[in-house]
Length: 99
Image (cartoon, rainbow, N blue to C red; front, side, top):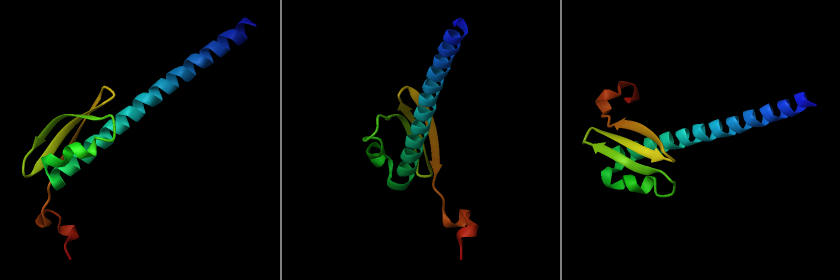
């Protein structure tokens, strides 16, 4: 009987740990997704447009470093920080796309 109680307790603890870990992974993925979207928006549409890409989620923009050539952003989503970097390209940088 003691073995069954111990086994059920360990099973519940393991399941709880897996659920918690899955939540952390999902938060990290959402933070990275938001950071990537904001960095691309910054490069394509300019720094003024970055706020529109996180207003529907719980993500917050921590930092934006932007020049004419690149944009680097830091996003906070449920206390998970993620960075993303996007750079502009010109036609001469991508010779495989030329026809």
